Length: 140
Image (cartoon, rainbow, N blue to C red; front, side, top):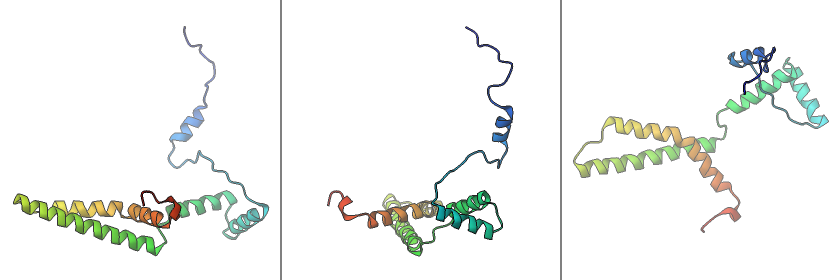
């Protein structure tokens, strides 16, 4: 059975072309606001001399791209990274000594990079576990 030939495209070629252009916005995010909230948001956009859509997009992206603002989270991340690094360095050094080898500089850099890559995620997990309601504890 053959597929019939249609004299028109099923999808617009313009749509396909737009999706391949970098930076072209093709997705929509919707939310519901109370009348009072809408007045606040519109006033903020007007104060910034921007359209409502432009102001909402910039505000959402700024918040999404913002670095952690909680100093406790940042401090905990650094403490976790320091603990992780020290424990791994002590362990690696002891293992190398037991094998009669040296701990190579590349190994030290790798431990540091692993700590840096995971520190913020681990700090957030520690805070989340700490702030969880007491009823959610398992095995205690």
